[in-house]
Image (tube, rainbow, N blue to C red; front, side, top):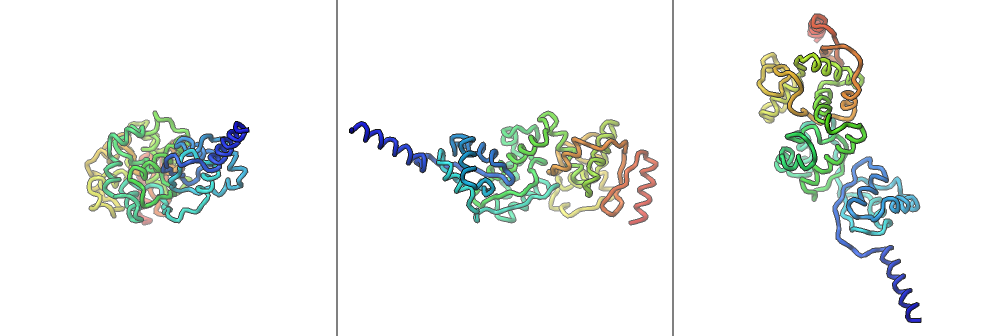
Length: 322
């Protein structure tokens, strides 16, 4: 009889612990915007919040809250009942600050948006974005994180460390890299070229054409002659002095910098901004044209030319129109 009672007590304790386990430490995790249920479950398993991905997904289906999970930042106890985790993830997060980072921003511009909303320390994030040890630990073969702060909508909170903030960008970038099927071997080439496309293109349908022009010029070992790289070079040298500069003079095109693609052949040393998915896709699937030049028409679009003679005529035509 005593053995039976003892066994029942053990079973009751086990059931209670499964329903509401003891608190075995807490972990901060971020659920990026747009994460699927399986991606969230995998994130929870990797951070030891839940024991099993499939178990969590099964309980999630039974709970009927599959579409109610919220992006955001959470402090969750490890190895808890999935129902507890689902309840936490399906609550609104009033302390989270939703911030949208547009396509085509530099590190400095991205940091300004974050710190204007009270997220992170401007100087510390800037240093981390250029910290060789930190960058190497993330597996990037680059000297800075320029180009890798993926444009998207994020949920931050004021208590996050600067490292945690950057890790949200990096995890999202790696997710996008996998979705776009970009190999690590071609990563720097693709993102750097996509950053030029992002800054030059105003119309979505022109992105593959602009990408093709740059690729054709690279193959011909001719300077890319991207005005966007000159602007980046000037701002990288003295951001405060050139931050509002938009138009270039003929003298500006002679600005000495490895980023100036009028003076140097090949790609610049690293991306000049963080490109969006459409610019990256344009580089991976450029048009089949044999264009070598493009010039702004003044209406947001560009005129594309094959020969230099055609290009000169187009420049004269649209210079008159302006």
